[in-house]
Length: 320
Image: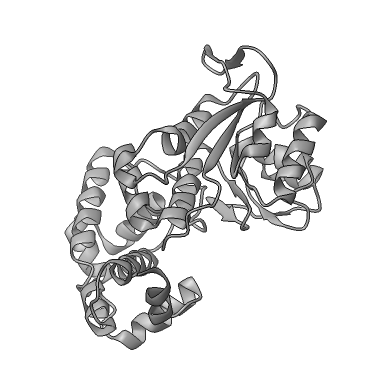
C-alpha cells in the first residue's frame, strides 16, 4: 500500500531536557537520506521549542535548524517525549500544534510526548496511549482522553501516539508503511536491524522481553523457520517440539517474547505476506492463499477483510 504524503517535510521538536533516544528514533527513520527509496522520500528538520543550544539527556547538546515557526511548514510533526509529566507545556507550542492540526498536519507523540498533545487539547474525545508508567497520570489529568492501556501505538489518522521508547520505532515504521508501503518499511527496518512489523495492538507490558540465552536462541531460530514455512500447518505441539520445550513452557515463553499466541502471530504474519504478494505479484488469490498458509481463497478473503477492512481484490486494484 502506497499513499505518499503531499507534504513530505517531517519536523521533530527539540527542547531543553530533550529525550535523546526518542529524538534519535525520529532522526534515524525520517532524517537519513535514502536514495534507494526514490526522490519523494521524507525531508527532515528540527524545530527548537526554546532558542539557542539545547541540552539533551546524556550530556548531548543540540542546535535546531529553526524555531517553532517550522511547524507551520510541516506535513508531519514528531514530539519525541517531553521533559516531564509535571512540566508545563508552553502555550506558544500548544497554539502552533493546534494550528498545524487544523490545516491537516499529522502529529506524532512518542512516549511522554503525549502530554504535549494532551495539553494542546488535540486528544480530547480520542483514543491515545503512552508508556505504561504514565497511563494513570495521563487519564487523571486529561479525563476527556480515552487512554488505551497496554498497546504499542494508536493511529487516529492525523494524530498518532505510542507507548515507551522502542514502541516509537514501531509507530514510525507504521507511518512509513502507511505512506510508502510494506517494502519501504521493510527496507528501513533492515537498516535498523529491527522487526519490520509489530501490530499496534500488541501488548507493551511484556513480562520478559529478553528470554534467557538458550531460549532466546531457540525462539529466534523458530521465528526464522516460521517465516520460511508459513504455508505449513503448524500446531503448538509441533512448534514446542521444534523449540525443545514442553507445550506449556513454549506457550508461556512465546507470549513473554511476543505478547501474543502462536496462532495470532501466524495469522498476522500470513496477512502481511499476503498483502505484499497482492501488491507485488499477479498471482491468483488461490495461489497466494496456498503459499501463505490459508489454504483457500475463501479463508484468505475472510481474514483479510476482518483485519484490513477491505477485500483482497479491492486492495490489489488500489495498490498493485
